[in-house]
Image 1 (tube, rainbow, N blue to C red):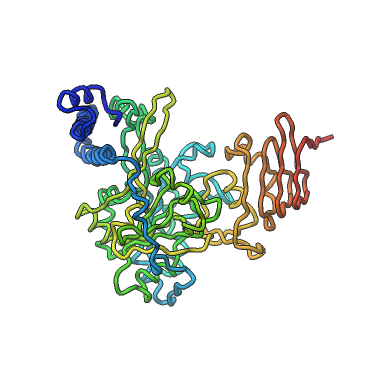
Image 2: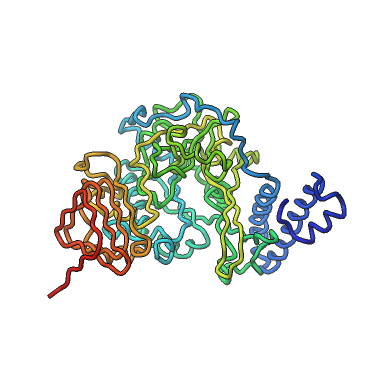
Length: 511
């Protein structure tokens, strides 16, 4: 039975037997009514001028909650999954490059959007994640601006950059964006919604008033599926359509592989444009054993759609993780037609599965936050396809182990884009695992390397415990370094470790 407020249960019980369908419907209605009442009370705590905009935002939140309490179990019938049609996922290698003289015209139909709502806290940094230095003292945001400026200068184009911020990152981002004033890039920002976290116990908001700054833990940004509504509400969707722009390319700002791809753009607005419009493209790439939890593409009810692990019934989780059954995973690089976004919003046909995220606040309160994923809208568009792109287009920096890769000689930096070194014999990146206790925070991670080792010939690296690296270290093949509790290992300057396991205690002392 649903965990609804005691008051709702009691009243519901007076009306119908507790095991009846009618009782469940009554308690659900009561839960929604009580939540809406609580949200109205929250709205009264803010100044009158802000109330109309916040009322619309809270209306979307109440809709999401209403859908959540109506859903029973995973929202997916596993037996309805169909085999992917042959043309559902195109191979990137079959795409054609555009003629140079067409490129400017194509770029003028494009908007680049970066999801910039995340904080750098998981990597031990304050403020937006996009301002963490990742290469040559350049941040994620610096690299993005460099890439787009290079496109605009090279092709005399005017591709705008749009940042979707959250209430966590908005203020800091606005200050940072000022430094790009002299660059040849128009930068726009808008904020995604700010929804109240709900108590797991009584399904009501834990916030006492609308002062988000005062109690940030009581609020959350509801996932990147919120993009569609907030992009329209910002006025930017209308503005870009009126300018004659046709597509947006949307990706996570921490995915350094997500650059504007002219071959994909050619398929959408260039010579290779299909006769029936492709309204939505999801870039997918081949799944490896490291990606088994990533969302995948399925065909269901004759529509291509995204399947996330949260929607999978427990008895089918192993099937979902199978590299043989589901060959691709979603990179979250999305290309969507602007007019089609406008249409599905006007017709109210946008429907994304709800992701229920359980959290525990610092005071021990158990809460849920309801989120949606931007790729889950795929099934609402016509002519949606997947494109199987090279792994190089998926280079996310989520942990310090990813940072080691992007800071190393594995990549060179060219006009804001990371390009894998031609000296690397295989196109795959090494598998790197760095111990959480000593390497998870960026500052501590950097303090453990005199400089980043040469990893051109590395396949696999595992480091655990109190380990430091001297200058000019080379790592090749499979290298495992384990310092047990109380031990310390200093890898000496100039060391070459090839297919080695290093354990125990190794100190290098100055004399």
